[in-house]
Picture 1 (cartoon, rainbow, N blue to C red):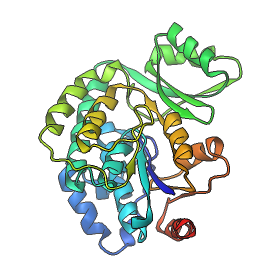
Picture 2: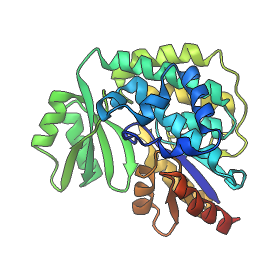
Picture 3: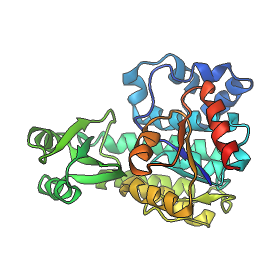
Picture 4: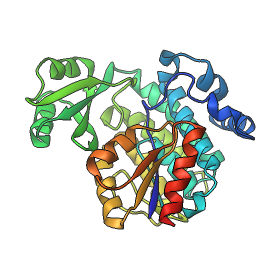
Length: 303
């Protein structure tokens, strides 16, 4: 069973879409994505610098657009048996599974990005990865500092979110055996700070038609499979202010009998986590069009 996974915010880098635009039809597809999302994704993915594409309202549609560009370039994607997305990557996963049309996925993620950017501007907040250490001790330390464990990423990684002062205190006095790494995001996503964005996205999502997924689809709310398009749409809205349980998603992949993981662009982060948490299951990170060949080989070997 091949599972395709779609990355979340922070996976983008300046100019990463340049090689993808060399593919037939990619420029036209990206132009449509730009119109639907309300962001010039061609410029964002080829010309804009790291600070500019770090902006939440740019980064979110840019990542989903890249994921769908690479997904559409995967010639044997019909052999993929399951999909899942990390945070905003769930919008790409929803389109890949047929729950949302690509147009609705990009329109909603444009709204999500703008709403979360507005929520993030209210207070100075951020996120930091905490690598290693005892998870219970890390969670207890975060509670002391009024920080939220926003992403349980598995593989010994947890992401803390909250005020910048509290994150600085965590870095100054980390839990023994851990490293604290500030992330290039603009706010405390998947926490109570994002509550205003939830209601805005909910209103927009209510007007969107959905279909039940055509392949296995897991929610990063709790790692469970979801077979209802309407239920998944609700989960997409609620996850804006609730923690991402990618650790539970990976446990579900193993339980489902995954034989390979293919991460779509901008790839690398989720494959890195899988190599630590799903040892023995081969994986491919589709970073550039050249990576479509090993991805196809992995899918073909599992067919």
